[in-house]
Length: 52
Image 1 (cartoon, one colour):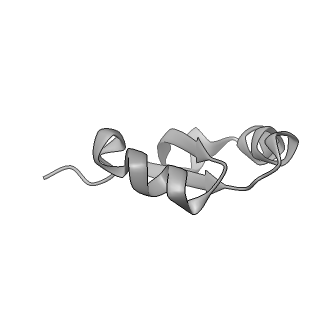
Image 2: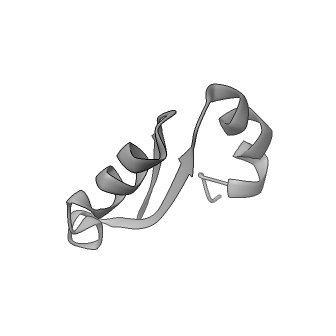
């Protein structure tokens, strides 16, 4: 399963993209959202997008 990261500064866009498709049928098991690149950088270790 994949992890999807959606980054946009508009909360409505984030929610819209999150609900746009049936992500599970596309192999996406988890969706994370952020409103800026700084938010991504501050959370990337907690989100652990890559499992070893």
